Length: 224
Image (cartoon, rainbow, N blue to C red):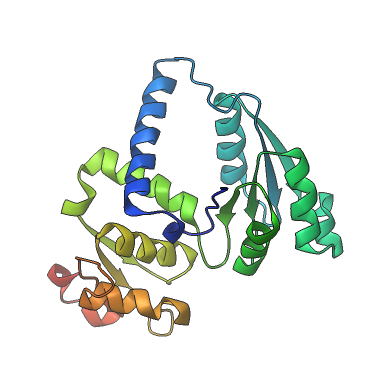
């Protein structure tokens, strides 16, 4: 059965921690210049409706170093940009490649691609979620600071795709996350359940998170 990674909550907590362990192993192999090619013979299609230097370089180089091949497709090079139904693109690509990564605008585009593709679909970024970046952030913080569950993580700013993925990660892993956003820039309506879970320890989360306007908490730094 194929698995998709469209948002953080597509993973279980155990799977997320396992991926962080694998990332540490692969980083050590890369530093030691050891040969590790688990993706030999595999091809990843990379659809970029929204351009990005870092996303393209990291995905393309990562796939190649793991033995696979990366196929770059810009918006102008796919029929999606010309009005072809996403289901048709998903079906065609599934015949040629082993997985699809898409960096796009609407989350529904990612969901629709995953719905119709017979190969795994990875969300490289959408307006609602940025799950791959969160995994990279979690790995970096864990590498530098140690046990994630012992830390308090603060996010200050607009609750955009990054913040919303952080909220999901905190709910999933039981992280102690504090989010401060300007009035009117809080979590989207679909995150109301997670917001409540983080604030009141519902939905199985064992940590609190604070949502407040930065201006309101300017004199209470210790509480963030």
